[in-house]
Structures are given as structure tokens and as C-alpha cells.
Image 1: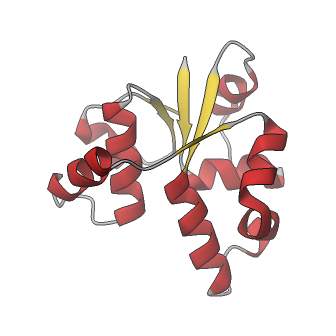
Image 2: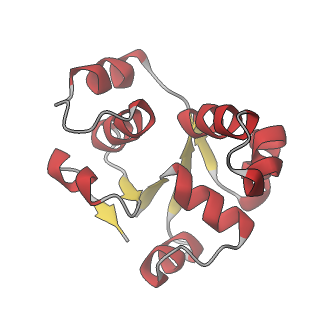
Image 3: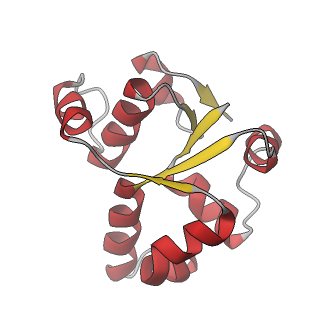
Amino acid sequence: MRLLLDTHALIWWMSGEAGLSRPAQAAIRDGGNTVFVSAVSAYEIALKHGMGRLPQAAPLAERFEDEVEIEGFAILPITAREASQAGRMDNAHRDPFDRLLIAQGLLNELTLVSNERLFDSFGGARIW
């Protein structure tokens, strides 16, 4: 399976927080799965950490690429096609970070690892 971690899933995985479900943890640990982390998560974490939110994400905010590489995850860049798809989506979900993640999941046939049930309304695969 090819997984795309939602930003909160990445933070919880990296910080060891108990927020991840058991199926999500098992999917991330499964060596047969490829785990992707979006460049949009780097932006979201750096932005929110700089605002004083997400204190537990300091290592990711300061060394995103290094921290992701240590975990063996692949960074997924944002393409113009994905950005355009996110911009055309139904406004039921207004969070621009999530919209990009949904578009990336759909266009790259990735299973999103997220607790966001609203993602399901866009037709992509999600595990939690």
C-alpha cells in the first residue's frame, strides 16, 4: 500500500503521541508499505509552530527533511496539477492544507492516514 500521512498523523508518529489508531500505526510500520509525507505538511508545521502552536513538532519545524528521511518516509512535492485540483474542490472542506493532501491522495492513488472523516466525502482511500 502507498500511504500519505496527514500532518497530524506525521506529528503524532514522530512525537510518539498516543493519538494514532492501531491500524494507522500498523500500516506505517509495515515495511511493505511506502509512506509519503507531503511538502504541504512541511509548510503547515513550520507556519503553525512559528505561531506558537505545535510545540511538540519543533524537530519537524526545524529539520523537516532530515527528520522525515530518518524515518524512511518519502517527501511528496506539490505539483501544479495537485494545486489546481485542490482549488477546484467542493468548499465543504475549507482547510487549504487538507485540500492539498486530499488532491495528492486522489491524483497519486495514495491512501490517506488521517482521522478526518470529512476526507471520505471526496472519494479517496483513508485508513484510521
